[in-house]
Image 1 (tube, rainbow, N blue to C red):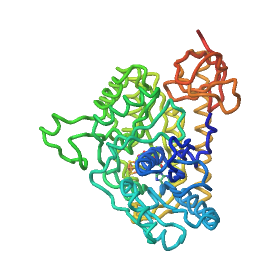
Image 2: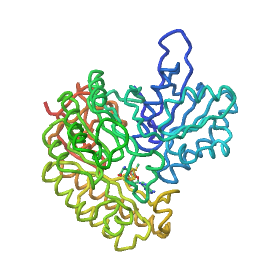
Image 3: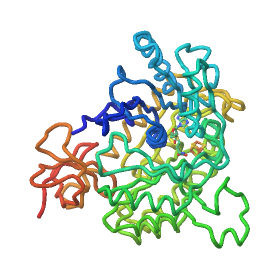
Image 4: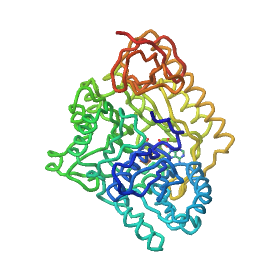
Length: 475
Ligand code: SAM
Ligand code: SF4
């Protein structure tokens, strides 16, 4: 059994036993930030595996150490910088060890990282992973190596990810890269480049392959999955021709194709953008029982004024209408969100609007953040970061307290219900209990009985906290 890693190390490599006598070089990978980074690390591991590396969990035996970094908020960057300091002493003990910074910080800080952090040998952006074997060679030849070029085409469609730290049941499939949205607070369009969709055939083939390996749940990943559009490759076209659209695959169509791989394969997806969340997707979700009844729909703010300043492309009324549409098509749908407290110019009334929207939407879960100004973004260039730090903290705390109440209420409504749960494995608290998720993405814990990982079981819910449902098996 794999011991679960702390959140900041998710995506870190597991130790693989050598399968032949030729000693392979060892790669140690640490991933920070979002699921997309986790998924990218699996692509990196695959590319290096093709080039004579195997992954290790022991940093002290690594020949190459990669940190796959996140730049979304300042504290994410600080964590990586602190980790780089820690790596200094390890590198002193292993001077030949190659250290690379990958991902969003790489693109943002480029060669600055090489100058400031003398121990960094490689800086590689999210579209440069095929170049990593070459970059390692450059370092072994005595030079530092940088590739932060962003691509118009790269989707790594042909790279079969090496599943890292996997429970063998759930896996991520990246369906697109980059983002064209330019939300005023967000650094992603600068670090990950323009939006590109991946060939649907390769996505379906990856899902099929995972199912055959015993996986029972896939999450289709992208920064704005509703905007997925395959018209033959390359950048997303603003105005596709009629001919291109005739042969195109939309996100709703992609969902249906993946759902048809096998009724026993559950499908999830993340992240949806409210401005692009169309009824075609909701209809498809309602039609296929194996598409999970769960939507992550980040709202960011409940105030139309703030949403406009954020350049989100929708207002409060639009968002609430989308929530109503979800409830209409999928009455039992789980809904979660992202909220930012203290964006530029947010006043007390705007904050109240966020709280009232949360109540009105009845979110089951939320990721909640204080606004953190990011270099190059529209907000940094146009608006003052003018909400005082203490005020941001106070508003965030109110948002968290309200969400705890909403999550508790949502879970209490499930007590007494019987639901289907996909078993993921032993719970952290007790080997006698199994943990899994229901279709709404809620965590369910129950005495394991004879159940196995990857099995669908029926559980009757007896009790709950705001984070977990507890129940017992029903035959
Ligand atoms: N593409 C997704 C979307 O549009 O919802 C999510 C992208 S981002 C990785 C995840 C979340 O981080 C965002 O939804 C937002 O709430 C938060 N976020 C992004 N930039 C931020 C910033 N500068 N300060 C605080 N939170 C931020
Ligand atoms: Fe950032 Fe907005 Fe794109 Fe999400 S949709 S990645 S928040 S720019």
